[in-house]
Length: 270
Image (cartoon, rainbow, N blue to C red; front, side, top):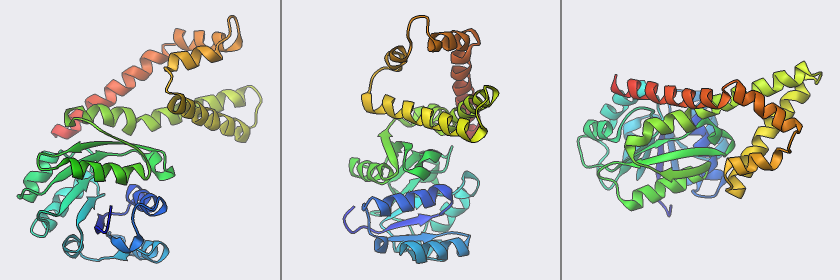
């Protein structure tokens, strides 16, 4: 990102994950990163550990930054935008990861032609295996979008989508980790029921899901093809898959994602 200054407003779990990913990947030098947060103790600890610049005032941070990353909760972003609107002007621009807050809402709050990029990351960004969807606002250019992708690729994968699809993204990749954790928990409980220790069963379940996911990503083969490669005629996997289909697991997962998308749409309109 050349020598641009990147300012973080908010260093909660996701903000911290992004900070560490950006620095760890070599994308930016800690000397070019500023951060502010209500938790001054955490802010100062990260400043000492990572070498970033701690800034107490959001307005000062914006004035000293080329790009502002809003890593705050949706319920406080309105107050933050009001605070920084007089300080943020083109060529400065901002990235928001506040769930359910549209680019139009942010643009209206800033009351200028500041380029805005909205991003929906997910929690696996904390282990540098995140999935992020990027939506450029009406004033954002291809250059802004590309730089945003670079930032989020430091902690996983990032794709550009239309903003009208953000509720689907929220449901699939945003809520999706919780659905996968439920599957891991169920696999673990099954292992315990069959006599494995809970520690061994949990380790096997998590690694199995991780490995299967990595196969799907690396091979780029259709999941049905990968599934069939594990399934021998009349074998153990075939017996288990029959029970999953009989129990409606496939339909339940689809329904869960659709329900999450509908709830996301409701929250956005509230």
